[in-house]
Length: 604
Ligand code: FEO
Ligand code: CA
Ligand code: CA
Ligand code: CA
Image (cartoon, rainbow, N blue to C red; front, side):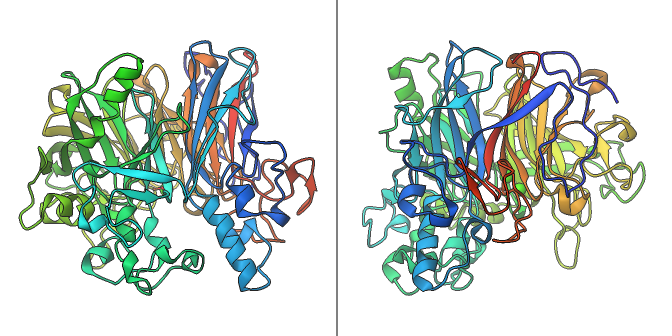
């Protein structure tokens, strides 16, 4: 196997790890340990974790469940910082003993609710290269829960579509749900995408709600039993409550008293995340995927311009940038007459998966560009606006992030097993595989390298899969026999040199391997050389990768370990690995979603 390349994170790729391994596997010369786990106390060591006696009140003061987005933002001295993580959803079947009665079931629902949201936790270490520890009771520690009040910003704030009996102004909303990926902005705030919010709500089955998967059935978590706002059918005053979710939220991790914001100017869909790049003229673009089969890629361009510097005035100004601007949806135009990939060595007829693209305007300068829809309707029912203008139906856009070094944009299309099946859309050059089980990664270059451009070029960087068994894989021309197998790309990240790192969600069920984290050089002869850095335990997804290569460290959020187990028959004991079901010194015999850090032994 080849070495991992130059820089401060040299590694020999790990061998593929079978999907039965309940461990974190890292390269030789590296070690891992958790920083913070589900149930760890944030404000007082008295808030002891005990899954056999968990309460909503405790959970609201502890690290939540299923951490997804992650950043570790170090201060200049390198010894203090904040860790920010999302808590996307809950796995009740492995979190709690079976409920004895409806009262107990409702108590568990309240715990599950309180395990959603975000966590901000201060971290410390004695010097660079040492592992971080989080600080109980630090001043910036914060839990954002379903009770935390958010303000709406932008053109749809206050619109009748956002009003409920609880909030007749349509300007404030409790909580954020199903927060998936995200990013840290150039001004130091955190953006987070509200993704599969539909699963929590009952509402009248209008075409608009149906387009988001919201209906009058299928509220499996039963949250309506503990808060009437989740049932807009029985409680018509809450008919619009689902419209108040599905946004990009912005949180200031440095101010635990600040009111977080939901930005209506960025549109409403199943937001995977949002990532910002500052353009040449100072306007900023936010790139955003809508993670659903056959949904779209979007871009927001601010009206105002970025003010550099870390002064309070600059930060306050920059926190207005996402409130006003233009919203676009992407159309990918292939340039090959034959695009579908069917077999070995198969490429599109012009030899490359590439083409041109257009950013189709949905809102310009606050005005709707979609006939028959008001600006507020475009922003609240953005998917319908995308349908109306002929956007390209993609294979589940997950994380979409601009490379901070080059400005090129990388988009993970995780998979789409319906592509080309029955009446579903056929393969096209940007989604070239029928029944796309393994996903692909697209590289997008704005015209003139300008984030405000209305056209772009694109090419497929990776058609994922296990090249040993799948002849349709492609790695930017790099020999398939020399890469680590990879499937279902989900999150993307960059190291200080602009090298791409990809984490996966879905390898166990598609190529029989644990999910992992992969490095992918983008330049020179190594372009496309996918090399696996780590893998996560049974049933877990690798999330939120953070690459501090100059520091010799990598961080990942290990999400839903042991997801397919059940109480009393857990499939994972990560990360505590004590006896099944037992509780020992704050450790527990069952899986705990956790943020882990991987450090280079030589540095530590
Ligand atoms: Fe929550 Fe699209 O992954
Ligand atoms: Ca082409
Ligand atoms: Ca994701
Ligand atoms: Ca995913």
